[in-house]
Length: 430
Image (cartoon, rainbow, N blue to C red; front, side, top):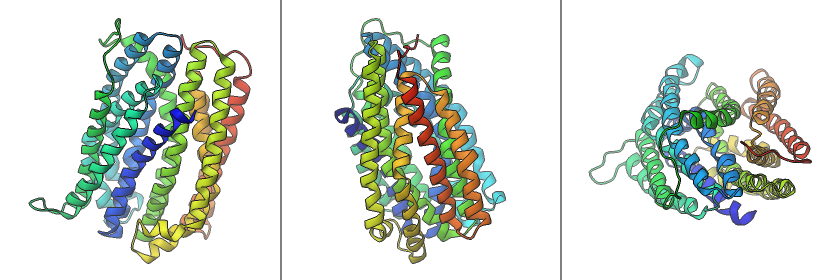
């Protein structure tokens, strides 16, 4: 499990690290720039998450084809995924372009709204690159070739740090671009990491079909759409919480983004374990070995729980140090330290629900995860967040206790579902 999961976990963490670097660099510019870019990044990913989820349909399709000994079928799924990514990116770009007009009417501070609007519009050229990257990553993961994903992350993060500093503050003939520079850096690095993965695909097996196949594309969409909706349900709650924190002022909004970036870093490790679970469960299902698929999933649950328990200690032991790396504003740091208590509490729930989504995805069960997220986040988490953070006296900390409640509810639902659905024979996708 860990031979497959570790490179994926590091790659997922590297993806989040680019957002952390953006936020940290802009924190040296101003609280408004930091909060606005963080909000813009969160909203951009909320919209993109639907497309990213759709592309994860390749996880069960590719891994089960590999498990069944059909590499040409797996590569055909990849090419249909490319077509689907291009079509889906055109749809995703519409809300990314329009949502910025709604920020100030929603009550976000004008300075924060302006920074978020600039960031989102400059991120538009990167949407297609992001979905194509997820497509290539899913194919390579399904075939067990994950090291190239790690190296793509390394190259992209080194480039992102250099570009962020140069474009945000200016260097030589390049003027200081502020928030615009951070967005441009992220777009360039998104396409750069895609290029690295494309180089790692290797020659296509004989019998691979590259032409657009409407039936196959629609089949992949039907599998991936619930994943995309699940991502929207989950990330939408976090983005809505970001909007609510934006109404509380610049310091709470900036603190929310700092805490979210750190929490996303540990979540991405759990998500990498979940991707490994999707692959190993899919391999078991593809070769007709349901007990092996079940063992792979349960091993992933245990691995994520142990890692996230250790991660929670970091938020408890080093809160001021971690907050200080992201902001120089004393008010922001104080609020982040309070939020880290909540982050530490929900680490295990966050890891378990990430693995649950991956393990169920490996079996081809994508609809249940969507409904679990609707009930958990929107039926439980959001009302708790509203009562504690908006109506209650706890502000942004109360909002995060609501997020914790939602994550815990989803985690319980997914582990129960996987345990029950894998006791018998698991049917392979047709």
